[in-house]
Image 1 (cartoon, helix red, strand yellow):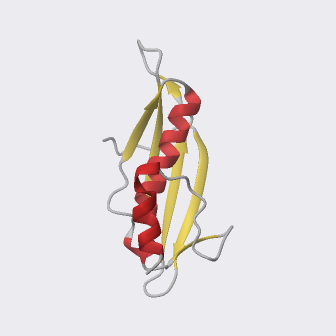
Image 2 (cartoon, helix red, strand yellow; image 1 turned 180 degrees about the horizontal axis):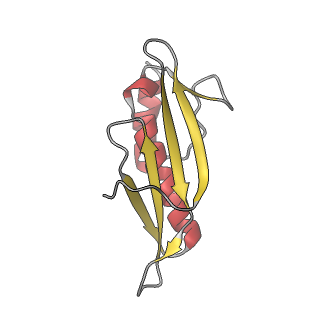
Image 3 (tube, one colour; image 1 turned 120 degrees about the vertical axis):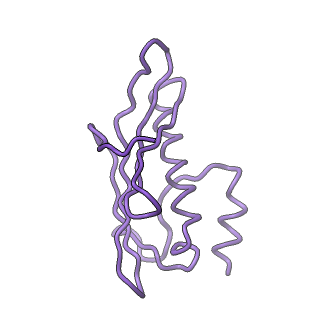
Length: 117
């Protein structure tokens, strides 16, 4: 995984950890790009402020699928982050702990179980 900067950021959101030591987590999603020599697309995505700031990729058969998979990948990582599980992660659009990110269907039960504690 590369640690360079995403060149063309099209989606960005900043989260704040409330209570305890203040910190900021930034989510960045790049413009989906066609893979060289393929019909598929890749979408760079990055979460700054967690374990590492490495850029990751989500691939799809078109730019929309690549973007949606990138958002779900970021959502899965953010929703399973300990500060979210503890109810301490917020963003400016919602102060209740609903982070406004899509998640893959296969982890919905995990997220529901975490938020009920």
